[in-house]
Amino acid sequence: MSDRRGAASWARRGSTLVELIVVLVILGIVLGIGGPALRPPAPRPEERWRLLLEDARARAAASGAVVHLELPDTILAPAGVGRELDALPDGRVLGQGIDPLTGALSRPGAR
Image: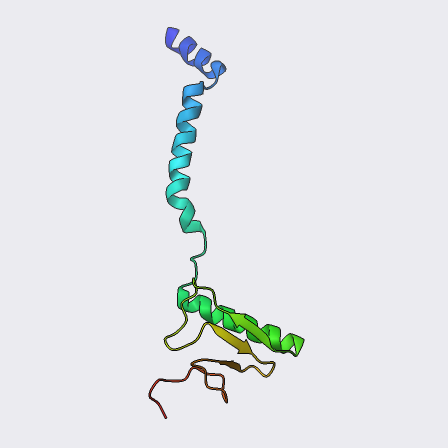
């Protein structure tokens, strides 16, 4: 009978500060491990270059004017492509390492 009274008094008492801290620590560990998995992955450097180029082309087409693009050092451009490019309203991109007629990457050594 005393077991029942002890269990009932514990249920009425609620949880202690120590129990609350333990739960918060466990929750912090779970979120620390699983939280980064919930974020979308960051684009690779080559992908960021392509996304910047597409954005510059879209802005040039929408405005009807040339959009000058200076690639920051954190963006990894393909080999042979300069850091400054111009996106034209017709969708082409001009700059070092870019074919001026098509706006595509020029291949080194290709004729």
